[in-house]
Length: 324
Image (cartoon, rainbow, N blue to C red; front, side, top):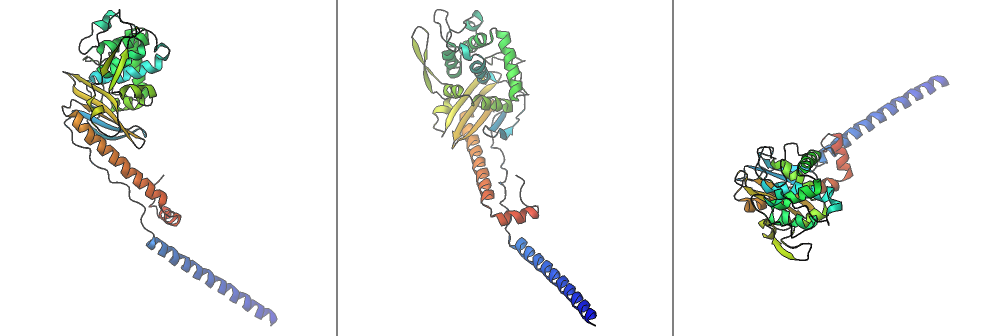
């Protein structure tokens, strides 16, 4: 009799336990359901904006800090780079000619005979490689670019090979360079996307930045004589906030070209515009667009960081939280 009572008690306890477990499960399901219903959606990512309109034949906008292309128009179209070529020439000289920067530059007949814009190199007016970089990047001297190339590379042809090697290393896969100054050659071409990548790479070098941000510079020859040279890049003196580079270009084949950079709140953007008569106006529109995109992305990232942990947990369980 006692055993029968104990057995009934045990069965009753088991049933009670099962009921309690079921009630707990139902309660948990109800609570979870309420949490799901009450949990706000995760912050919505910014809506992509269409690239600004431009009269350029090709254009690209690049987030230099993140290595990200933000907008483009015919970004990989083959175009003539004109004097924006000198961006690549300059960064190679700074990197590979570091031990020659204070030495007299080689001034050859080839350099002296260059067509187009020149600074008027003369053998009786020796100038260091470093000072010559200002003549190349500000005045856009084609003679300067050849002297830079021959001084840095040891020979003209070797430097051109270095240009193509460096372009590949940077990731500029739609380019081929045949000279250091950008004079028209069917075998000398690039793309808007390649040039923003090359320029972003160059802007990592502090001395390159110092050169291309100058509106004027007292270019000094080795005999102490100097001449004030002015930067042909009107964007630098346009009043645009954070304007700090990079290079203009113009030939009959290339049209009017511009690679420009600006930095605001530590964010560096690079824009390239090729064959664009309105380059100095349109560059501002493209940069405004880029900085607005960055502001929206930062606001989104901040909203994700501020999302309460419980909301983040529920949204992760429901597959709504974006992958980090």
